[in-house]
Structure formats: structure tokens, C-alpha cells
Amino acid sequence: MLNFIIKRLLYLIPTLLGVTIVCFFIIRAIPGDPAQVIAGAEATAEQVEQVRAQLGLEGTLFQQYIDYLWGLLQGDMGNSLKSGQPVLSEILSKLPTTLFLTGASIIVMIVIGLIAGVVSAMKPNSHSDNFFMMFALFGISMPVFWVGIVLILIFSYFLQVLPTGGDSEFKNFILPAITLGLASSAILARLTRSSMLEIVNQDFVRTARAKGLKSNKIIFKHTFRNALITIITVIGLEFGNLLGGTVITETVFSMNGLGRYIIQAIQFRDYPAVQGSILFVAVAFVLINLLVDLTYGSIDPRLREK
Amino acid sequence: MEKILEIKNLKKYFYSEGKVIPAVDGIDIDVKKGDIVGIVGESGSGKSVTSLTTMRLIPGDVEDGTILFDNKNILELPEKQMRTIRGNDMAMIFQEPMTSLNPLLTIEDQIGEVSRTHMGFSKKQAKDHSLKLLKLVGIPRPEQVLEEYPHMLSGGMRQRVMISIAMAGNPKLLIADEPTTALDVTIQAQILEQLKNLSIEYDTSILLITHDMGVVAEMCDYVYVMYSGKIVEHTSSINLFSSPKHPYTQGLLKSIPSLDAEQDRLYSIQGKAPNPDEVLEGCPFAPRCEMAMEICSKTSPPLEEIEPGHFTKCWLYSEEEKQKRGVR
Image: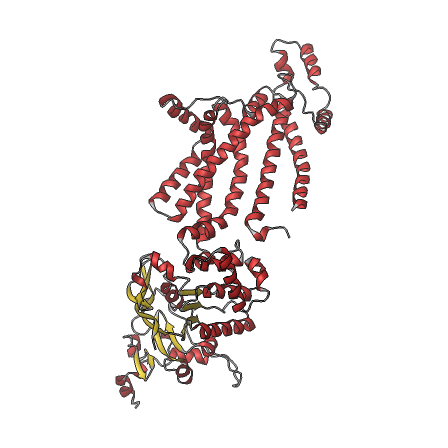
């Protein structure tokens, strides 16, 4: 078990190296010059070069990448081109908001997705099944930013019960978490339903019924547990989507998190800030999927390491 | 002797794409207390539907008929009451031991579930009970097996676990649906032996569904031969093997390879079983029957007692037809 975890953590190294390479070069491939942005539109070519030197953006790209990597190994993600502050501390100050938002939206996804999926699977083609699957179709089809705006309109403007944005209090997170979690809950609901329906037709569920067990034992102990492998896989993958989705959600709800930080950094061509944030997101994604793999073993004895 | 199970005129139809599929079409089956009764037939003859309907494990109502279990018509019981019978007084073993156990639960949990549900046992009591059951079905190192998961056991072992699950409620009737079909021959013999011993020791009646005449000969006191959703012959197994009456039964027995006689080719019944949704006038076996007469394809014969205790559904034995053919 411990070996498995260590092995997986070692895999992190090449993964993250890949992330830095892709991220480093792609952000520089986007048209736009941070030195030009900072120096202003009327700056002369010399002034721009001077700014470029101050920002440490001279030399070949390869040279810059090696410098960046060397800095990373020492725990230095560079300074933001925009604020001049260390990127690491800026990210750490934004991270709690984003993690809290992602966590809350995962809860929204799991609660809505599992209830809708299980209830639908219990009576396929019934009214409740049709209702939930209709809901799932809407959930998948509606773009996140639009859902956010509609929710703001209903709950903040008409009903005036929840704030339109911000991130200081718990109630600030309610609308964004629903906005972000809704699409994922729809996907989860559909997959939960289909994997439950697949398991229900298995021979061992028939055995469970032949034992004279009560229906909730049959549904939860025998069917749902077997469907969990699929469900947890989806939750792990959706975590990535949710993390990516914070970029839009935080913007719509003007929350001061990592998502909005990335958007602003990209607009400003703030290379170190973009690279640092994406590295954090990548690490989070890899760790969550490691957690998912570890959970498999605790559910299914066949997947346990010998 | 008293009957534990009495199926009367049972009809179970399925409806698919506007077609009616009479999977079980008016059958009567009796199982006496302590007896092992076989239902023989090929795939699609309705034997599994009969067994699952008896357990009420098939959704939907039956078209007609009653199933008296211990003198109660279980088809009229509310589901909640049926649940107290299932796995308790009436238990079932399935064909596929490889897939019939839940892969995520320990053997202890899967056997113990029955006594915890039906007898209100505590976890500890259920464990002791499960251990006793595993010993009963002859599982080696039972203490360890309790902690194990199905994928760690062989097919034969899993089927023994299935039997201990079925025996957990000390059932009055055990329905075994092709319990040895998926197992290799040596294990097959052991499992059958085990079932027979359990039946004697605990006075449990067994309804044994099979397509294997050898299994019937080994196990059964009484046999029903099913073809196309109907019973075509039933009698004691001694009668059946010594003088089979229905041409279908005769064909089945002839198609068992013999070690004594020299045979170039194995006998087989010509043609194939009718599709369940085919509507046939007359006897459903007529198209494949070597003895078919004119009447066979027109009218279905009645199920009649042609010798004491020997019933068959064939025109060959009706008085009129015998006279026509000059048979006395």
C-alpha cells in the first residue's frame, strides 16, 4: 500500500515537468508582450527593452525555462510581473477561496447527483426517473456562466436572499457552488443511474432478492456499493472540471480566488503567475486522482494490492 | 404423503413487441415433503421461469394458476410476507456460481445475512451459524473462507457457499436451478451428493431443474419432463427410465451416450425446439416427432394417466388412436 502511494507520488515528477513545459511555452506563444503592456502604449523601443530586462525576460526561451525550473526547485515561482510580489504567496492567499468553492460544489454534485441517480434507477421510466433525467439534460446543456447569471437574477435580484458575489462569508459560496456543481451533478446522476441499472441485472442481486432481503438492503448494500467504482471514477474526473470551472464561476461571482487570478494573469501576460497557478491546479488534480485510486481498493477487494 | 409444493395450472406469459410468449403454459407440479423432484427440459422449455415464478422473482403477474406452498397460495401474498418466506422456508440455488455471489462482500457477510434477516441473529450468532453451514457443505478450512471474498474461491467452492446460503434458513423447499451445469464433472458429483445428503438429513424437499438426464437418474424420486412451456410426461424416475412413454423423453434418453453399445454417431432429436413466441397448432413436439400422426399437428393431446402413476401428453396412447392404428 505504502509502496503504491510512493510509486504514484514519484509519477508526479514527470507529470509536473510536462505541465511546466507545456504551460511555459504555450503562454509565451500567445500574442502580446508583457514588457509592452507594462511600459505602456507610448513607450519607445528602448524603454520597452529596459522593462523587459527588469522583468528577467531576456535571453532565449530555453534559457528562461531553465532559469524558471531552477527557481522552482528552490521553491521560488518567480515574482508576478504585475504586482512584483512573489507568485507563491499570492497563490496561497487565493487558494482557500478556490478550494472551498470546489469542495462545496463537489458536495452539491454528490448530493444532487447521487440522489437523482439512485432514485431514477430504482424505478426506471417512472415519473421521478423522467423528471430527474430531464433535469440532468438541462444541467448538462446549460453553460456555467449563464446558470450563474440566472441564479443571481433569481436569488439576489428578485428574492434578495443571497449576495451577488464576494467570498467573505459562507452564504457567499451558496450560489457559486450550485452554479459550478450543477452540470457535474447532472453527469453524475446519469452515470449513477446507468451503472445502478446495469448492476441490478447481475446474478448476485438476484441472489440477494432470493435471500428475502429488504429492498433498501438490496439497493444500497448489494447494488449501490457495486456501482460505486463507476461513481467514484466520475467524481474524480469531475473534480478536474470543477477546478477548471472555478475560472468562470469566480469571475461571474467576483470572488477573489485562484480562478479569477488566472484569468487576470493571462490577460496581463503575467507569465510567472499563470505558470504557478496552473502548476497548483495540476498537483491538486493528480492528488485527487491518487485518492480515487486508493478508494477503489477499499471498495473492491479484487483491486486491493496483494 | 403431504405436499410441500403444489403448482396448479400455472401460466406465465411474457409480452414483447406485441407478441405473446407463453413461457409457462398451464403446468401442474407437485412436490411431496422430503422428495427430490426433477424438472427436465432443454433451454427455453420454461423450467427456469417455473422456478423463478415459484420464488416470485420475476416481475409481473402470472396469467393464471396457483402455487400452494405449505398450503398457502404464495401468488396472493403481499410482497412483504413473501420476503419472509424467500431465503427462509423456500430457498434457491442458481446455475452460475461465478456470478451469483456479491464480489464486494465477505462470505461471512453473505451467508450471515440470511440468519440476521430471518432469525434476528446478532453478528456473532450469524458468524457461528455461517461457520456451521460451511462445515455442513464440506468446505475445507471454513474459518478462513468466512473472511474471504468470492474471487478467492473456485467454482465448486462458490457453489457450496451458495448451498450454505440456501440452507441458512433451514428451508422446507430448496429450488436448485441447474446447480451443477457450470461445474466440472467430478465437482458436479460431489455437489449432487451433498444436496442429496442435506435433503435426507434435514428433510428438505428439492425441486431440481436440469437438462441432464444423468443428474435426474442420480437424484430424483419423481420427474417432470417439460417441453415448450408444458409438461409432456411425469412419473417416478424408476418408471421414466425403465419405460419412457413420450417420444420426446424417449429421444432424450436415447441421446445419452452409452458405454456398452457401439455407436458411430450419437443419437439426437431432429430439428430444434420451437421459438417461445411461435404459435403452434397441435402438439408442439409434432414437427420433430418421429412418430407424428395426422392428429398431432392439429390438436394438442391431453395429459393423461396411461399407466398407474405415469402421465403423458401424447396421442400415441389415446384409446381412439390406438384403435385406429390397430394397437391393442
